[in-house]
Image 1 (cartoon, rainbow, N blue to C red):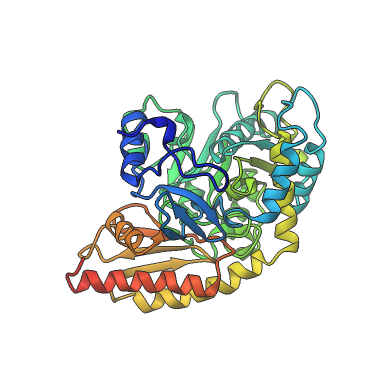
Image 2: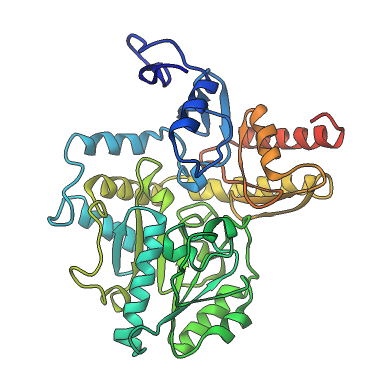
Length: 425
């Protein structure tokens, strides 16, 4: 096995640190020394620009996953890199024991973007969800009057909100929750898209309904158009918080700042993450009005890195880019191209395809290939996507992708399907 001191790609300038190291060497060492909590495709990325990445052996690949939407603005985005470099030269961490000069501008910009009064910054998307659970329970006890320790939260089957111990307690994915009990109580799961089932699950103990406006991990599942409006009406009538997990769906992915905008619904709280850090570092937040977030007082919730100066600098830049840049329009325009092209494949190797904005879930005919096999074959053709359950793959290319590159990537999908049907793959 190669010496670990030379593992990595050659630097972009100056003397090389050692001989180039193969993809196989990188994977072998990673398999030997890391926990096997992922099963990555056999591609070792060394650099990226825009919608393209280059592996350690110099092969280019079209990134049509974009870090599950964390890379909405593409690799090496100059605006984001400039903001990061500027802040790196100033200060990176103060903790919340003190103020920093990026914090107030960041929370103000994000709150204004979402139309809410308060922002509670964290780091990962799962932390934002955990924050929402704590806030909803506290709100139920202090505002709604639910007896202490009895608050419940209604969630949807097929959800993906993270993998912490509490969150997996209401997951319906055996890979996520199996073998990790005992589970946290207080959650009621009902079928996604079924407003009647939510109504039946709500009672006087219900603090919140937590829902993804579009379910990403489940395969880009878009609910019926009346689903969120009916949940909003129900939550209003039953005095229940409606919390929208926009970690994947928000910040441009569907062609809007918030996926909830497609149905005109304004929830009581938004949860943002992934793209909020610009693909540079993890940044997340719960965004709500004072009537909700005002229940949290000093010492009751926090994070050493939450709201750090680097996060503030990146978050502010992301908000500005969404307001001033072409990203939302690009997601809408190219999303229509994506939707139209996917129709070509339905019934011809694809059982079904769902899309909203520049985001799609594609159910491959299971008689042809698993989702994993499709991803492997596409990677051989220079296109990176990710499977989810069974034979479903999902596409979420960076919003900076060109129409030409998007069409090329979809052409490769068509070619793989043709090879599978002809028995060539």
